[in-house]
Length: 342
Image (cartoon, rainbow, N blue to C red; front, side, top):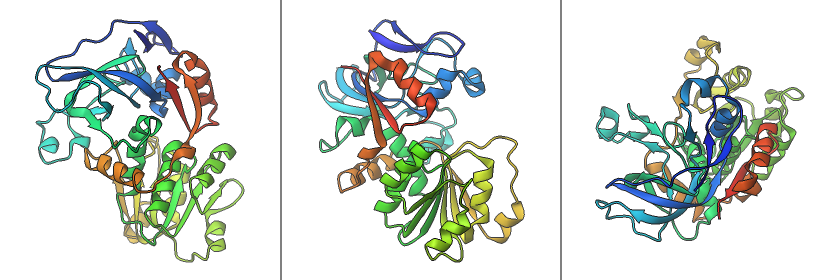
């Protein structure tokens, strides 16, 4: 079969012919229909410091995808051949303390599909049956292919109540920030104000429902607040940029008792004014992946009851044209990019 393989410890990704994976007693084999490129895939493609420390070559990458079940293991009874499914990308051990208290998303022994084992940028993939998800037929194949990042955005946005709240999103134009914007609007936030350095991505965030999106080098958050009658600060902060400057800007503009979801990966050198966190009584929550499997339930319910995230998909390519897709990803003028494997 064809697969996109990180076969060399250098920048790039390569389409190769590899064996179709075999399955175990508790696994299923999927024929992949559509996949989507994630920021993690771009890190692996660029072979940055994180990728060098994390990835063992060769490995087939990709963890955002959907497809059809073509084979099931002998012990599998809840998944059938021919079913249209997607997959939770984190394989939890099921036995550590967190798994046994229903917090599988922070399992002590998580294995990432497309990172620690072969992923979904291929014609076929073998996955544990417990990770397979049946999705409502009203949700399209393309939407199914991006439910992994939608899950990150859902976990980020819905960690705190949003109804009637003023929300600040840093890195609002990136795929997760833009998806979180749509969720905040759907959940009844009052004002959704965001910052992003990219003109393309600022426009994307506006399409996803942001009240106001600013270039922080040209307009301050305080000025944006004043234009929307905000005096005290933001109730909810969603940090999706990974920028120390953006994070500190967020802390400075939070209302007393505000709550912040931290999705962006901040550098180890990040410094913050701890006194502001303490005296403002702020709550910070680290976000990793999706809460398994409550976030999936939230996503499905939102998508089948009116949440429209179609604008987030900006490019579509056949998998054979993967290089063009990665070039666009590296340039940054895009939302989600879909790869078609049929």
